[in-house]
Image (cartoon, rainbow, N blue to C red; front, side, top):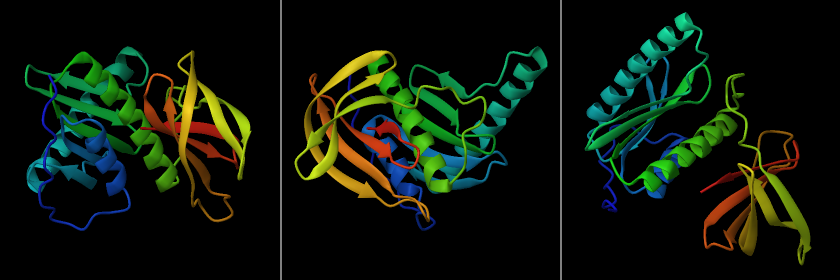
Length: 221
């Protein structure tokens, strides 16, 4: 059952450059009540939430502590690096995704259907990648590969190229429509990222992003 979209609570600080990423997380999955970027000292970098600011920051800080315990156990048992923490109950789901060795993305959501949970997982991957790009930090060695897409392009009127298919998790997806194109400015000496809003044959809409400097494609919802 779909849950009603949450209403953002009044902030106690001005939004940072990362607030838009967090808003997209909340807008992409209607059951999300809190999305926050936090460092591994428990300091909240920014948040977007229907909760009171104090409660949002406390939840984010406690999640850092919980993840720290998991990391300690994993390292002692030599299980490798944990990069996702999920705690689910009948009513709520608390998720944390490590962005790199220093930052964490925390989300609190109303427990929903399995498909919505899968969608949230994909949204967190995209948000973590956007944070790294905006903050200018590299992915850690333990970060799972698979964020980079294989995209086939075609010539396009007015543009030098446009995507026609992409392969994600081994699945080849055909693009039925390119809905728009724009350039997102990058770092100094960067050409900027070329963004295409597309619709697939199955009706899914997403944004494909081409980084000409690296000749790599990624995506976001």
